[in-house]
Image (tube, rainbow, N blue to C red):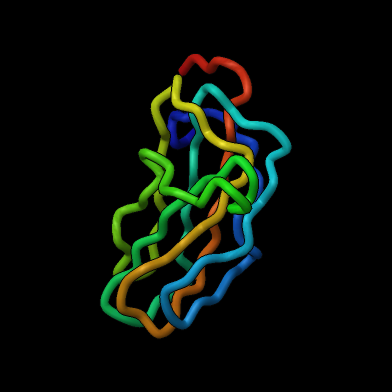
Length: 126
C-alpha cells in the first residue's frame, strides 16, 4: 500500500536475476490465456554498467510461430542508466496476448535485472 497501488500478484518474466552483457531477449512466458483488460509490469535494475538500457515487454499469441513478437503498447520502460525500479500500466481495456517476453536494447556491458507482469483477465478498478 505504500506505493498507493495496492497488492499486485505478479509472475516473473525473467529469471531472478537475469544478467545480459548486450542487447537481446529472454525466453517467453506462457500465461495460458490472453488478457483483455490490460496489464502491469515492474522492472528492477540491480546492477548496471554502460550508457543506457531500454527494457521492453513484447507479446505473441503463439510464441512467435506464426504471430511474431511485437511490443506491448505501454510496455516500454524508461531507459535505465543505473539502478532503478519502475512500474508501467497499460490501458485498462487493452488486449494482452498469451505469450510475453522481455527484450533489451542500448549500450551496456552488464545489466542485472528482473521484470514481472500481471495480466488482467477480468476488469480492474483502481
